[in-house]
Length: 171
Image (cartoon, rainbow, N blue to C red):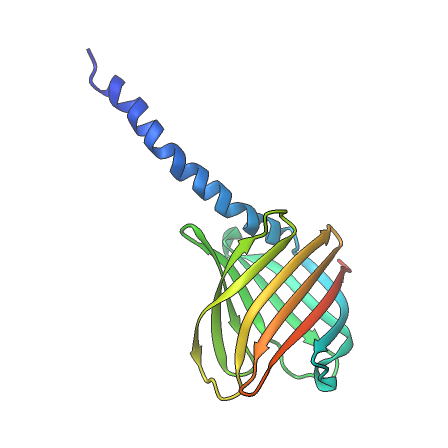
C-alpha cells in the first residue's frame, strides 16, 4: 500500500483554510484594483480649509508591479504637490503607504465593511517628518463602477481635518 495515499487528504484538508483566508483577504484588493482609471470630482474639507478645496481634483489609479500593487495619485489645480499612495497585500493583510507632501509616509491596514461598500484603512505607523502632521485614516466607499467617494483624515498638530473627494470615472 502506498503511504502517500493517506497523506494527500491530510495535506489538502490542512491547506484548505489557508487558501480560503488568502481568497477572503484578496477580495478587498481586487475591489480596489477595479477602480483603475482616471477620476475627477470636487474636494471639500471639514473643517473648511479653502486652500485645499477644489472643484477639480483628478485621481489616477493604476495597477502596477504585475498586479501586486495599486498606485493612487492625486492632482489638483493650483497645487504643486502630487501625493502618491500605494495599496498592496502583505500576507493576509491589505496595506497602504501614503507618500505625503508633508514629508512622511504613514502606513495603514485596510478592512472591508460587512456590507462590502466601504474599505476603511486605520493608522498603523508613520516614518519621516511629523512637524506638519500626517495622514491618519482613509475610507473608500464604492458607489458603483463609475463613482466612488474617498475620505482622507489628516492629523495636524492642532486639529484633525477630513477631506472628501466625490469622484466620477472619466477613463
